[in-house]
Length: 278
Ligand SMILES: Nc1ncnc2c1ncn2[C@@H]1O[C@H](COP(=O)(O)OP(=O)(O)OP(=O)(O)O)[C@@H](O)[C@H]1O
Ligand SMILES: [Mg+2]
Image 1 (spheres, helix red, strand yellow):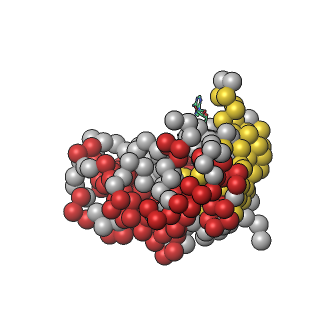
Image 2 (cartoon, protein in one colour; image 1 turned 180 degrees about the vertical axis):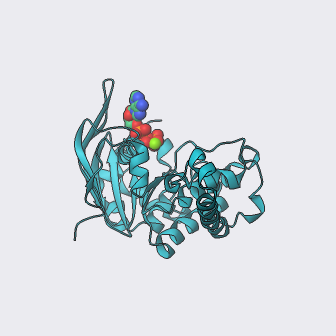
Image 3 (cartoon, rainbow, N blue to C red; image 1 turned 60 degrees about the vertical axis):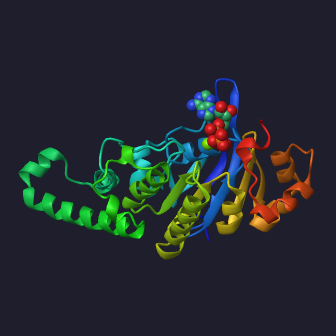
């Protein structure tokens, strides 16, 4: 079986910084794969290359048999690649509903001019887009927020709306860049449940970048570990947690496995943002 997403030896240099260095991994249809690593490891850059926001200097990315290396983000999105951003990317002055409707744009065939000429077709399309968006609103339990302006919502709910914007496009694969970043424990639990449900119930493949090790180890089927632009480990959560290279990357090799295991009782929360580069 060939993988849904094949990332082959991709590299990216910014100025003098080797952000990503010959990274290779596969993601299979329906999988929930996490990409973890300390700050600056290159995780966001990998997501940016998959979704076309950055073009790899070297290597290739194949999605469902189509070489998407270096294609424009809009074309990649149209193929079924959805994403959320580390820094929320919503129209803050618009309502939740309108932001979610914008998430449908990859499927909108009719532009404004055509809409005036072929009003019937536009209306049918509009009804269908509305139906999809209302399903997403139900699924994410944000019904009471439909008419609220996004910028006025608490941070955790803005993150949920951003997931909604991505889901509205009905992606085949969803790239999530720190969907739980900055959230409190309760908000993280909600978000983890939504991510799991999207994966389970909708069958959407998920690539998750997340610093909360408790969540990552709980919900991932497979984990890819990056450090300094390279993949240093890949495997099940159990394997990865026991891998000395991973422990070294997170803890700087000073404290070792004992510290990692010792944190289990506190929910496995090793926050990579403070782990090494501090
Ligand atoms: N647009 C850019 N211009 C210059 N350097 C960049 C750019 N984007 C990323 N970098 C650099 O590339 C490296 C990898 O960054 P990246 O954002 O991919 O890391 P990350 O693993 O997502 O980190 P974090 O966990 O902090 O989000 C870093 O050294 C970063 O400073
Ligand atoms: Mg990042």
